[in-house]
View 1 (cartoon, rainbow, N blue to C red):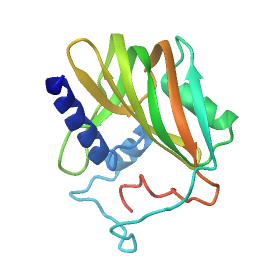
View 2 (view 1 turned 60 degrees about the horizontal axis):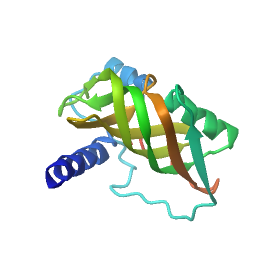
View 3 (view 1 turned 180 degrees about the vertical axis):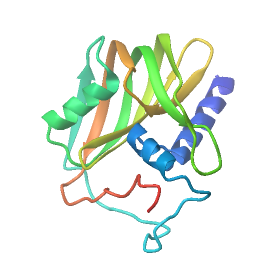
Length: 182
């Protein structure tokens, strides 16, 4: 049990740290078009920025077999008219996955898009809904290893997926939280 826990904890830490750099493919394409040797962060951006608040409600989303996990989350966000939220947890199983991960430690950031078919246990879903946009990361495993990354289309539910969202009040502004140039 300890052998499995240590890599999962390490993976969770890596995902949490790399979450600041990971972007949607659109952001990736924009970075590639604007090649530079180091991130040009805004001088006005604080080194540490916080937003405080309480959850206005909790939404639990269930996705049935065959549903694309990212598409299902996006539909739930739209259906529930969610602007900003914290993805608190998620469990279930998958028939396939597609994620993107940071594949360099130099700028411009390089990313890889691992994908595979086959049964996987969905161990966790976490992340944010930022101005109606889902920014989710997943951790999943098969019988030999655990993996994870930024959720991409092509991650499909096997038996079910249950995801819990903590909805923030509309006044919470997370707009720049995943902007690597801020």
